[in-house]
Length: 324
Image (cartoon, rainbow, N blue to C red; front, top):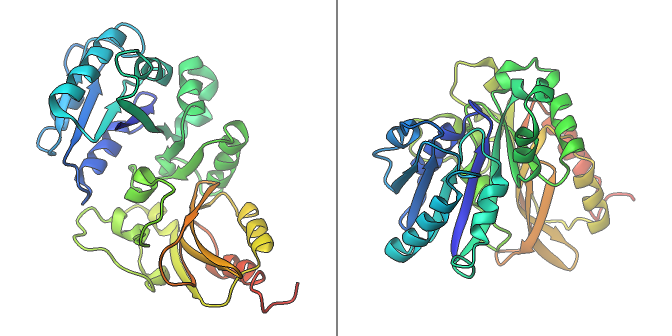
């Protein structure tokens, strides 16, 4: 089955920026095909993506949610037959409803050959504040998302970021929501699936520095900041935590449920009395998977304007050797 990723988002939100980052990551992109849908007759996004490696196919002069739906089905069918890709990334136009792409994937000639992996919607922070004027497509893009990137948070006052995050969670509770600047985000948040794998989350500073060539590991703490002239970047916080003592599972789950929305990423192993499991937490949603490494808790945290000491203090209350 070819895995399909859909990039959605209203006009100017930053979809192409995210796609260029995805293609520039040090990830094996062999077997990846990109399909770009520009509404105009000239495929600007397709030109912007030249030289990034994967084959780029343009569907211009229309919207794949409506007039190009049949073209999309035929394109997917031909791509599958000719290139046999492992992954297809579809960047829809800013006025496309993802429902049209979902319908295309259900076409009889594609059933059994492709599976939807994730819908990622890029949301401009200022667009959320004016959401009432954008219509049904705008909300459909958000409601169908598995992951929402609240992009351009430098357009918001500091105090508005947690408020907007909470508003989005209230309206769209099933999506993970991550605040970003210029769509800077760690690759695992985009690609990740709930499967057992070696812990390899990188600090947010690595992804904020577009010139970085090698990742930093555990133990960097808050000294690993993003390299950016924007003061907003300094609001991002990364820290890690190691512990051999087991956590009480019920208490730890309550701790996760009580986290502030500004703490949007936790990844690593968590030791409970009877087992060690892998935790993937993104934008308010958590997933557990089997852990095959050494027992013990090894966690990395990424958040925006949060207190490391307060988060760790609350979590440590769940250790087995603490009073209940």
